Length: 117
Image (cartoon, rainbow, N blue to C red; front, side, top):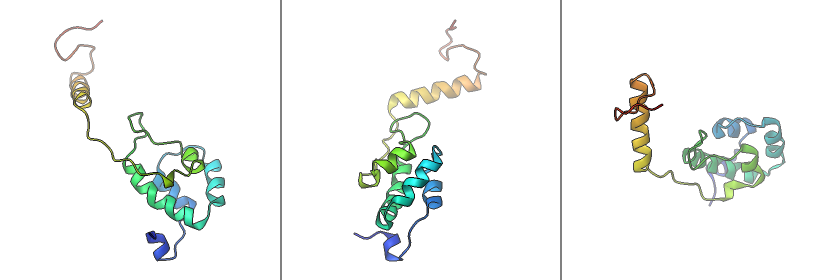
């Protein structure tokens, strides 16, 4: 299976990948690793990264996005991209409680009306 990059004879640049990965840590190390990769791996990494970024988080929620250097070092573009699971009932309840707390000004009161110390 050829990638869209192969079909048009394009080789993605580090800037292309860095902008898409959108988790800005250890740029110099990542750039060195990128420049050592083959054109084929750069093409595969770019195609996989789009799906990978859409299915991971950078804010601590699961599944969390790997450090960009880890992604490159481990050649994670050979892995299947994750599919983000719909929020669980617990996540939905937590989101509602957080929204209520923001609306109430975060005064320390439990939304159920009980005071919390």
